[in-house]
Picture 1: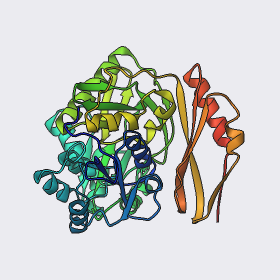
Picture 2: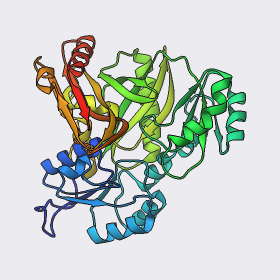
Picture 3: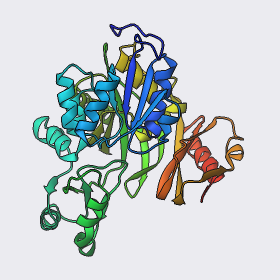
Length: 396
């Protein structure tokens, strides 16, 4: 249990949570924190972000500016600093943690997973986990040399990005010439570096939600997912796996999360080929593919995250029912976004819709998610797809 009592929000006794990142995942974390009477401060780089619409407080800052971040932390005096995005001044988080602030799960975890170089070197070189072959490149010339060394096909990703942004699958020489520019353009922050990875002909990929808490480590049922251009489009739970593959996946997830330390939920991404399992990435926070847990589990990934953070009990096993999610993608430019067909999408039993409330769009953006549960994963996926097809997003 947390050593502090939970006071009423707005009073000196309140337990304060500072969310660094206030998108759709942060919104669900805020909702779960509010259920326990916590006082939530939603922080992001733009106003009216999804979590800001439900939290008691909202602030707009450049989270990559360490001095600005430090000043805000000192003013708010949060009990928990909860990073929900990668683009944060993580060096400042390390400093704040050394001064006694509680960074979730740890400042080191936020630092290492902010860029793919840190986490890949930890996994492959220190922990000796199985991964794809890889090389880092810090210039266009180095990128081309790395592609030549790894061979085609391969994948080029910016070292700092999220939701697959900037990921380029290189299958032919002509695309290799443009891979550096495309990857860097899709990255976050100021880092001009990419990772070039060998392409594994895997059977499927999973997210293994792993919860570190005061009583140990809990694994959720594996989540299968479908990506388009490296971005999540569908997920389902449970993903069928052999017993051997599941055991290996849990062992890998257990090792990487134990090294990162702290309490909270981690989204561990893995490639599976038969009984072989390869580490891909890890996020020390709720995962976008884990939105399926809003209907598949009695305790969603967000509820588990909050429980683990404040020291509340987390079950040793988390039961799930066959469920699926389909991302609702908007296209266009504007700040007037409307949704039609939501009522039609909810006609079938077992369906749910979550609209994120994002205030604007420029290009393509995930604006909501269609959720469904059924007797089988196949039926749930069909139900989620059918529901998503009934929703029209208008942008003006």
